[in-house]
Amino acid sequence: MAPPPPVAHLHQSPSQQSPTTFLTPSNVPSSSAPATYSPVDDDGSNALEDLFFDRFNGVNEQVDTLETQLADFVRMLSMSSAAGAAASRIQVTRQNLQVMYDEREQALAKVVVHSPLLLQRTSALLAANLQNMPELWARAYQKLKLMATHLKSAQDNLVTLQFHVTELESLDKSPNDKLCTLQQTIQNTHQYVANLRRNRQDECVALVSFSAPLRVRVADELNEQRRKGLLS
Image (cartoon, rainbow, N blue to C red; front, side):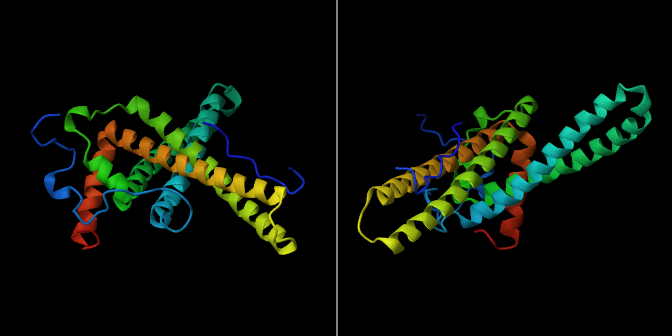
């Protein structure tokens, strides 16, 4: 995955049968859900999805931290002087990890249910293509973690770039090379953010397709939201 675009500084110049989906027919999104969803700029159109992704990202980070701690304790276990302490810590850390794995699954299920396009795409997955492959889960979650880091960097860059544009326009309202460079960089960064959002959604759909427990979480969350009358 390419790193975020750098900040420009001022001194730089088919079958006829209906497909079977993993969600039951009663769980398929209603026709009121938008047919298309454009994850483009930070103009507020992604606010709800980003809110649930932020919660998911926080849990994903905690899982990563606990997995690192567990690996450290396992290494300590090989040292006779620290074996006793390491063994007890390993047990506690594994218990904490299981809790966080469950929380992460639930957090991602909420992302899917509260994102119109993700809900539509996952509901349309063909049952024949669904699998349960635990060996792929860790890599998928790591990719989502990396995307979150790059997305935050790009969004921070946009804030800085826009500040420079505003500052430059206040000094000289006429077009100039520096302003054009900044505006082009902003456009490129917006496109990078849009690509990241699409890639992030693709990864979520893939993860749903090869994680049976996650599919159960999504279906349960969708039913719960409908029971509360929050989704039609």
